[in-house]
Length: 276
Image 1: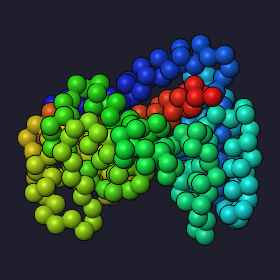
Image 2 (image 1 turned 45 degrees about the vertical axis):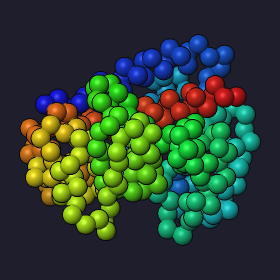
Image 3 (image 1 turned 180 degrees about the vertical axis):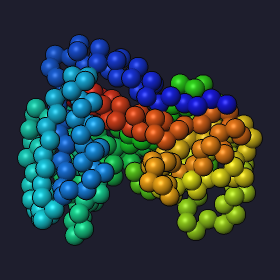
């Protein structure tokens, strides 16, 4: 059983990125827009800005109040879209109630969509013509590659069907020739389906939902969830302590997929700069 050290992998990839960015004629620019005062979002934004500073990306942080209107958000995104100094734009989700995320995201040009959430980038992924891929699923693929996990021909099960993680994750695994099943709140015989998985990816946001009796002996288990347990301690979707002994490879929470997500954001910003 191997416990993946996502921090170490992310650190190595960031060093490689730092060298590549240092060789560019100018620093890439990443604009991060946050609306409202959601504490988790503020932490994510701080971590993203810190990562930018470490590898040579100029970051621009824009904070709008909880009371911001749809027009104010979209006007700011239009302004950033027109700024040649900014290569990537990230709109931190979720937005406060009353704001339409899809409408706002449509104001981010596809070439500056470093989150990979635009309809065009998601569509290209389904056509196996990936250009910019959502950061968390891309981070998972890098982990699988680094651990030498065989994907082709394997049975992969993805728990969760969100547009930001579940669906793009399933498409990446399918594009890598896995046989993929996507499970969600309406799935029947969930335990039996999970038990067939050679690769199990959970992204549902339910603390310790995946228990040992759901996991096949020797499976690869990737935990994307970030939750709090009954004691307020950070944990994933997987009951880590009881599941880990059954796996050949497992990601912990924290320290697994999380560090890779931000690293892939930096990678996508670098790619956006190359496309100028």
